[in-house]
Structure formats: structure tokens, C-alpha cells
Length: 193
Image (cartoon, rainbow, N blue to C red; front, top):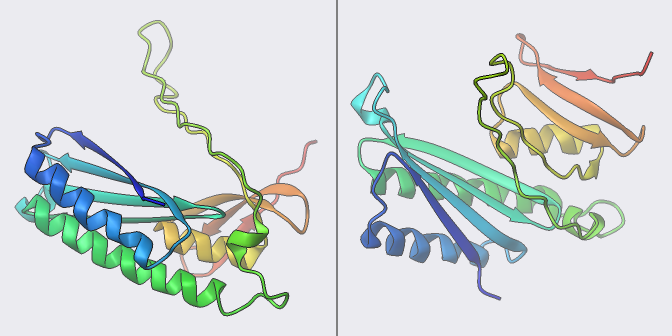
């Protein structure tokens, strides 16, 4: 099975050289983790960044059955940003494999336990001139049932620093995991009142 690589650019000309480079490098990721089904690469040039070394941005997101891994890097050269993001992704894959393939007690990996669900495309609504500018973006995503420890790990693997929304398999409810100022975690368990 060939890894599907999608490349998107923002404020950056996507040349054939960049496209070939990204496709060649990213398509090798399935050697590290065979369960990867698709990879998305977002390349951007951010003119307003304070430092010149932060203007070229490469974000890499890989999806598979039961997992999503993400890495983002900034550099003064787009190729350097891509290479660093790939190195970071390889470390995240190794960490993911170490935690999930060592065993869960029943011998199944998290990917085997998760249902085979097709992810819905993420939709984005543009700001309307008639409505107040309250909601400028909407995201939709599939919630995979997991326990609190898996949610902490997934939050780390995605690179989310502040919060993570997940479906708690133990309570059968949607929860929000957040990082506190002291470095510990908090859990929000909403109730309808």
C-alpha cells in the first residue's frame, strides 16, 4: 500500500522541486509505522514572524487507524523546516510504537482496538460581514474512545500544549484534558444541567 501524501501551501510557491522533495521524504514514513494511511504536509511562509528563522513553516500530520501524529517546525529555509519536522515525526512515531506495541495487557495495540472509522473532512467557515466576528473557524473530527492516560499521551503526540478533547471510554462521555500552570493535568467532565 502506498502512502497518500497531500501537500498544501500558504503564501509560498509550491514548486515541482519542493513537491518532489516532500513526497519522496514523507512517503518513507510508512517504513517506521506501517499503519499510516495518509500524510498531510502544510507549508507556509509567515511574513509577520519576528525572527527570520521562524518564517518558513512545515507542519506534518499523519493519520492511521486509531492515531494522529503531528509535528511542526520553523526555519529560515523551507527544506530545513521539512527535514526537522520529519526528524521530529520519526521520534514521535518511535515513542508511539514503544507505548502501543509493547502491549496493553490483552496483546492488542491501540490501533487494533479502535474502530475502523473514516475521518470526516475538516470544514472551515469564512467570516461573514453580516454576522459578528465571533466564530472564524470550525473544526470537525472523529473522537476515538480512549482512557485518560491515552488522552494525555495523544495530547503529547499531537503537540497540543493547552488542551485536548476526547471521548472517555470509561465514562462514555466527552471530556476535555488540559495542562495546568504547574505542569500537571486537569480534566473537565461536562454535565447537562
